[in-house]
Length: 92
Picture 1 (cartoon, rainbow, N blue to C red):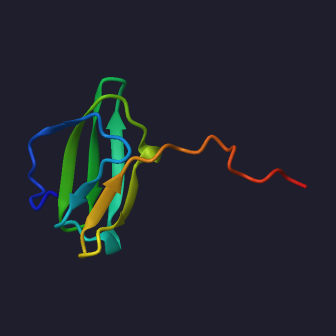
Picture 2: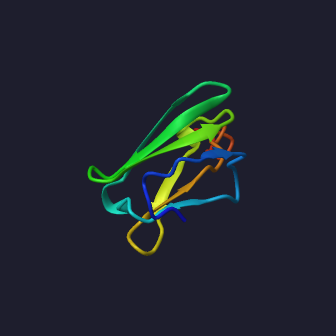
């Protein structure tokens, strides 16, 4: 749980079942962005007022990050795998 959007640490090995709870970023208006390469990147989550920039060590994909409500007004971040399409029904 991160109460302060000015967290200065680096996050490594983030995957299922890990979660990051940004208590000061309102889920109701939260958006995310990610930029990086095979070694590291920055995950940015903002609600327009509060912004958290998280240094991520390792290779991540923007489409993998998922935002949800933490149940207390904040934003919960998870990194579930992106579907490879095998979960979709075959066309008929």
